Image (tube, rainbow, N blue to C red; front, side, top):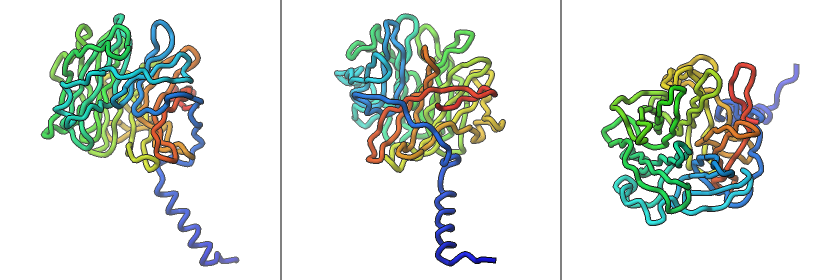
Length: 320
């Protein structure tokens, strides 16, 4: 029987060490993002289809808006608040950079929930603004939705609005700490309607954030991002999902594990030169369901990713 040489054995051991350090399914043949052009430098993108045609995109930053007529070519559309948002600076340490907006069109106007915080802190807040057109400078500050303090076990960032089949409004949000939370909103004001704080998902203090809830068929699907963002090409963000027949949960993954117990089924992770894809947004378009996210290029630049989202025979999403 032939024996492995010491050199080959060391080589195999090294390969095994690299393999075990990777996230689950890291070798999976995930598709690359579809072709996009123009101003595609984004972080934490959120899409809405405009009633007159085209798309409006909101994302983290000072210049927070982009537009597209065809979901391929994008251009900068300025800031929602070109004169600043003074009501947020108590949470941002004076910075103008606002985080992770969620944009939608309802009741004849645009709604944007967005967060104000500083990196690593849970002294954070989520605010609401509305606009008749979505254009820069037309947004009206509607007030504070929820805040978190350093004494709280949750973090009030990464908002996502969902309206259930009964027409009730809900806001999910959260990052690290005790995970993803949900509150009820008033459909007339868009602001918080009661004091109940619900738990949707968590990893015992580990990295989970960026919830996005979408109804399809009999299920509400909760998409989240696991692991670490904001490290350039070293980012380990990946997109996970669970589902529930109720908007308030419990959400479970494909194996039946509750998302409140760390469950989640991976549908997209780093592959090739696509590093740390995450902070996802899912919406239905005329050609397909669409998954939007950001990822990091090899040089650390944060870019827009767009893929079709298809469904397998058990009604679980598949990135294509």
